[in-house]
Image (cartoon, rainbow, N blue to C red; front, side, top):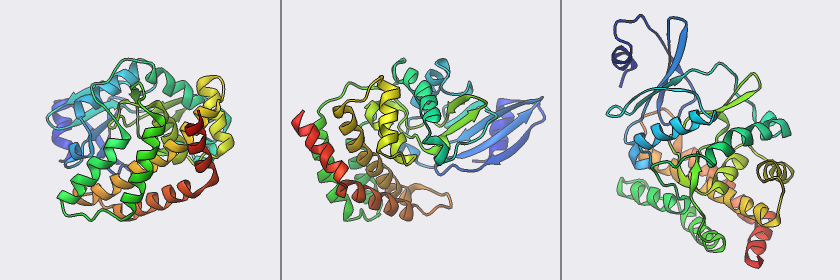
Length: 295
């Protein structure tokens, strides 16, 4: 879908400047400028409901994030077209190296925790179920599920058993480096399409592994978030890093059947399978499983 017809409906009779925004690998994003104001028009990609994306839930999550200052203002929502308009944030992305600093970690917590503590979202996100759903959908569409899936699924079952049921809280669930924008001293979180009621440790682990935090930075994250670092929290964070990569790997598998974007999803999936296997083989991961068994 082209942005011009949607923009004309949203701002009828106005003179608009529309330019594509790079970086997205699920949707099409555009900057719309008019009368000295700027907005982001995000048009959902093809068949994204098969990725577990509910555009009404995304809209609700974006509103909830804006209400607590974690996300930019929501301007408009066209449900039938899966199009969301938010205020354009003037700022810069933080490179991974900077994101690992104590100052950046504190900013992430300041933005993320109020959302976790905020109002409920009308969607559920369970990483253990998501990977199964993605595997089934990929197979049904003729995409071969890698052999690494079964090995990872066995580890995931063990993690789920050891952690047990978790009280669902509002979560972002896609805390890639590209989804943070620093505006002066304020950090914004964007792209709430995978948001749902889930496990805050998935969110923290997703941020950790995608921004390449090491053990010391993970301790910094836990201390900033909870006020203290406990062995069980550290173990939970360590094992949920595995689940973050498992979700990313299976997302890449399913996207091979769905996406029309020019992106190597097979390589993306393989890269995350390789990383989760390195995670599972590391002493830190084995120690975390043992700590959860013993607690």
